[in-house]
Length: 256
Picture 1: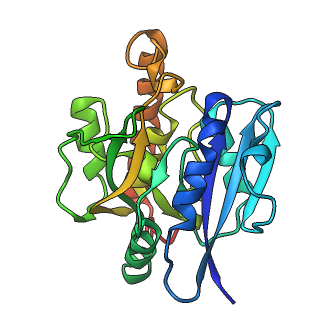
Picture 2: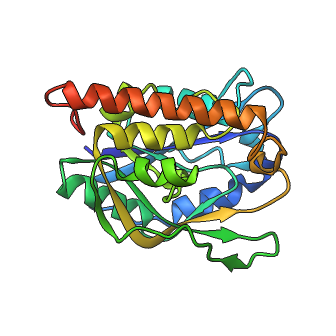
């Protein structure tokens, strides 16, 4: 019997047209012996029609729909339908690079104290070219609990790309999935994970992060203004509360 890793993908609007390329990147993954993947695609609202973009004869693809709640609510709904021991994020407009899932699985199988992984990401531009961007990546290897928080608190942006997360299922369930925010819910999840367990940074590029005009990151409220201030305030309060809880709770960590 195979062990599953679940891929969760929210989709709405323009993102639906990129699904075939995301699927191709999944099909190209070579997993360790005894492993397989399921792809939980969550339509965020009505009239998305993801099934029109994907084959109907691949039983690994599981498409469902929920009321429009934004990408982070849709990710969490996809997680609710998933069954894998590890849960990997893949946005509809992004692509995994070859070997990404195998690397995530290898780390989590070999290091039981590690609760989550991330990897390097590069931008995929509209003309098909790729561009590296500098987040000041950490050294590859184990990320001690709390290390992501320190960088975020100083810079108000994560050092590691939260779109590349792969998480142990019990840890993701403990946090309730992604933070239900109009944006930055993946950053909130990253800092929550960081408060509870060590992570691991994979230096190999694991994600092609597509840049296009339909992204929520292009909205004027994304990086400034009252909404941004409220999001950042709640993300910090959430992380601070979890850090305080884990500091006084015996056994808090990856296996919680």
